[in-house]
Every structure is written in C-alpha cells, then in structure tokens.
Image (cartoon, rainbow, N blue to C red; front, top):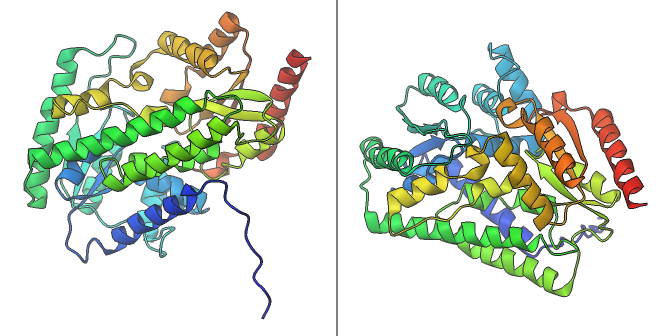
Length: 410
C-alpha cells in the first residue's frame, strides 16, 4: 500500500470548522423531510431570521447555486433548464435551480434540495425573483409569500418605507405559522435577531481589518466564509464561528502577516465572484494584485435594532446602501472605499446574469478615475454559468490592467 501524501496545509484554522458547518447543514437538508420539519425556500434579502425563530428549515437556492458552481455542476444544470424552455438570458442562479430540480441532482450526497413546503420572496435585491418564485410555486404547488419593498434608488429610505416592510414581516409571521403549524414567540425571535446582529458585526470587523497593509485576509477567504453569514443568520454557531474567524484574522493583522506575500497593488472588486473560478483571484495575486475591498460581501451585513424587532430587521434589509443607491451615490461610495482601503485599482465583473447591478459600472469606473485618478478594468462573464466564461479574454483584460498599474508605479 502506498503511503498517503500529506495535503497542503490550510492557512486558516477556521477552515475545517467552516467545512463541518456546511456539511452539517446539507446533511440536515437531506434528512429534514424524514423528520417532518417544514422547509421554506427563500430569495436573497429575505428574512431568514423568521424561519429560524419558528423552527422552519431555510433553503437559499442562490447560495446553493454557488456550491453547484464550485463543484462543477452548474453548466449541466443550466443547460438542462434551457432544454425545458427557459431562456439562456435568465439569471443563471435560476437556471441552475431549475436544472437541479429537473435532474434531481446536487453536489451533496448526489441529491438535490429538499422540496419546499412554502416559499418566501422579495424583489428588493432583484426584480426577477418574484417571477422565479412564482414558477417554483406552480411547480411544487406550495404557497408563496412575497415581501414587497420600496426601491428608493438614490432618494434615501424613509421611515414609512421601513414601516411598510416591517408590517409585511408581521404578516409573514402569520403566513409561516399557518403553513408550518409552528407558533411565533417574540422572545425567541429577539434571540435569533441577536445572533444575526452579532454575526454581522463580527464579519464587518473582519472587513475593517482588510484596511491593514498588507491585507491579512484574501478575497477567497472572504467569499468562502460568507456561508454562515447568509444561510445560518440567526444561529448561535454562526456567531461562534465568526468570533474565531475575526480573532484569527486580527492575529494576522497584528503580526503584519499578509494573506498574499507579494502584495503590490491593492484592488477593489465589483461585484459578484465567479463561483466556479475563485482561482481568478489567485491569478491576480500572482501579479501582486490583492482584492482588499468589495461591495458584494458587505451587502449582507448591517446591524439590527433588537429593541424594535420588526422595524430593526426591516432597516437591516431595506436600508442597505448597495441596494438603494443610484449611480451618483455608488460613485461616492466606491470613492470612499478607494480612500479607506488604499486602493490602487478597481476590477469590475460585468455579470450577464445581473444586468441591473452591472449596468452602471462604466459610469462608476469613469467617475472614480476622473475624481481620484484610480484606473479600472471591466470584463464580462457570469457568476454561475461557466459556458459564458472565456479565460483567455478575461486574462487579457487583466494583463492590460496590470500593465497600467505597473506603468503608473514606475
């Protein structure tokens, strides 16, 4: 018998704990139906805290799509959805979801997600989500609740818009109680909100540590560690994990240990990662470019005023500046990030699946350059469907970008 070669040592001690948390979640998802526990499928920016407070197992098909992409299944799933008549122009999160359903296949134990007993959606992050969830409602013949939200782009969020969302959260509680048979307890709800708030604050602290030169954490470590922040928001184990993660990154920062040894250019990343190719960050790092700030991970943060549970949760979801800012406001936001994180250049991923979020990128790039003299690069691809990715074209764009950074340095 040949001797087993030791694998590459992981930089983060918390990496093993993260892997166990992900495995535990998907193991539970495989058993939840046998346990007769109600299941809810949620869109992003839907209040998962309500589900945890009422003992309903939450599923995020979008987060699941990132796992399918990382496990090299998303291309097959997207293609399968297209054979059923769905357009290739749809969001690849949705195509991946439908393809997984039709094939009854997934990256964990070979099976897909547990079928939902109810569906919860909001259009706040994306206008197409309600239609996606309507199709799921027809397919599974289960009830759907859409938490409506005002979209005050560039105008700021008003108190009555917060109250509008909060009132619907109270209605959502009644909806979940009706279709799960579980009662709502306000003290349990506040406890869940407390854990969600603490985890968000700890993740924000990690983001602040990225201002350290050199950066103590890599973009791959940031994006892969978002799972507890999103899927386990409101769970005690999420808080415990982020305390360890924060302390580990703080230790690196205090000792001046770089996540990438040859940090030369500090970069701002916009918007979505390529979930099937996070190693693109490694390619940039080989050239000395380290992503030290982004506007995707920060979109899942935000504090919660637990003394006003429904209004506090509404503020967390509705008053997110990434979702409520127009192009002029985003230019100012990005310029502040450039200054705060000592950024040398900005890389924009124009995501064909999310045109609403990508369409202002050229204006933002130009605004940053005109006001601060910081250059940017834009490449087009897709965050889940690798069929639209051209490694040669993307790297050509990045190579030209780094030549600009190098010439400016000289």
